[in-house]
Length: 416
Ligand code: IZC
Ligand code: ZN
Image (cartoon, rainbow, N blue to C red):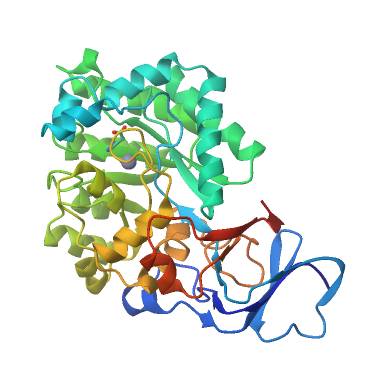
């Protein structure tokens, strides 16, 4: 067999080889490290992962791209399983309010926050949204992200804007290298006109929007912002169950700011992930562990909200919750695409080990998007999504924080 691309002499090859399912407890520290590793690719698939030299049946020809991995750390492509990628405008105007002590929910309830991005996203053309999101995807790719989740949620009751966001994600998925997994999230804020009757908006999401999203095949997941003053546990439940009936897998923004019981609900309705979990109770964690709901943690958001409160990652891992990590890239609570910074925060602030961190942004991130059979580890038959870090080992990537260590990013077998 002729290889199209080979990375040889890899000082630290992190394969994450193992079961194609979210890893828990000590499994999160078993990263399948190979020193002096080699990876061979044919087309868009991995055909060999091992130690030393290639076996005789895999040939390097004149056409093979050969990369020297000496002094480098090689990992699967990183997976960012929670972003609000497609949106109009930005919210740097909130910085001054934040510095004066105004909190995220205060800004939202005063008609700013998500509502100001809804306005900007409505006003933006398809092309504006496309170009802006494309720019972010280029940054993400340069940082080693090869798959990203993208939520709607800046149209809310304006369904055309919701559809526009998802259509932009769909076109970008076709046009550029990063794989995009789409999530429908009209349940992101209560629109002004439904302030006194939010259940009416819930009915519209359930009866009008969800069936059309299914019919147009515009999303794989359905998500809800379950939070004080946003959607209640009861409303969230109805929306997520309706989504499920229409083939949309449930995800939830749970206990980001107030401990409403979103984690318990995630376990009850069988969410694939519950995200944020900063204020989650021990009961909530226990029920998530029992139902194997993935805890998708977003420490850069905690950092940016300036509350000093972070999800209890250590406790969650010890309790057996599978943990993934994401940027939460959005214009309000987390305006950064930098997943490597998230990885450093997860370790430096939430005390996750570097091994747990890399597991959280590869195989567990893939599981958070239901793509664990195709991506998330370096194994024969999987997609050739690979990052070559200019770093001698994994610890170095986490420790030397705030910069981009990715030197070469390979997506579907091609250097991008
Ligand atoms: O635009 O503020 N938390 N949704 C829930 C967000 C943050 C995004 C935003
Ligand atoms: Zn979010």
